[in-house]
Amino acid sequence: MARAVLPGEPPHEDLARVLLWRWRRNPLRRRTDLVQAWVAAGLFLMVLAGIPTTIFLAGDTAYRHYEKSARHQIATRHPVPAVLVRDAPRHPEPGSDEAKKARYPVTVRFTDAQGRSRTAQAHVRPALPAGSTVRVWVNAAGEVTGPPLTPEQIRNHSMGWALVAALTVPLIGAAVYGVADRRLERHNLARWDTAWAETAPRWTTFP
Image 1: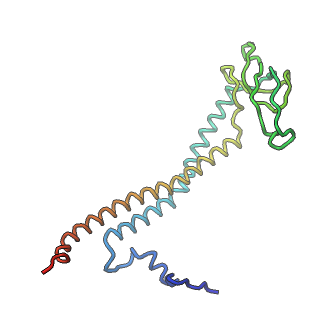
Image 2 (image 1 turned 180 degrees about the horizontal axis):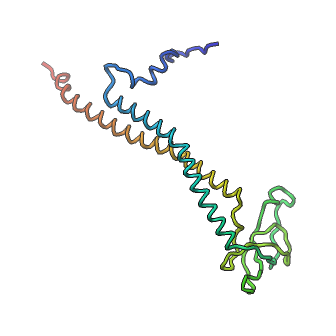
Image 3 (image 1 turned 45 degrees about the vertical axis):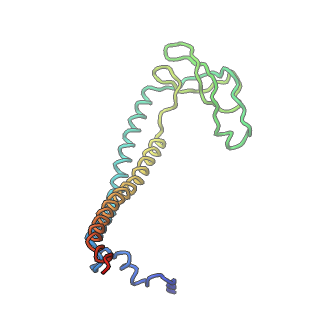
């Protein structure tokens, strides 16, 4: 069943004419109106073409970057056993899903590659008692750091940058259109002022 036309709403067959009025010849259409229509159409096509291209380039660049970082991390980091110097804090809700994911910073002692005993902060599970052994990752300088990036993390980071790039393209297109629209509007106002300066005396002069 066809949708009823609301009061004041143009008929369905005229909707396209209303939306595309800048493309139709009429006495009120200015040259700047047609320019604005072409600018909008050009930017729309550029955004459509630019989004997939930008997604691919941003995603591929990010993937290569994170993959290179992961290889460097694998080459320069290694796991070592570490012993808790003091008890880890207890979680307020033991046994909960949040407690299973929570990690607390605790001082641990470990031996670096040179055989020296060192202490550092490491994030461990709640309620671990002092003397417990955990595995920590250490870099070439003997500092506690995170584990190398996993393939899943590399993929997620790359997809995140691809999404950011995809959202940036239409924002840039909208910004360019906004600048063009303001320039055309200033041009229209300047022409209107000139025309009014020529017409106003005939409207305001009394016999």
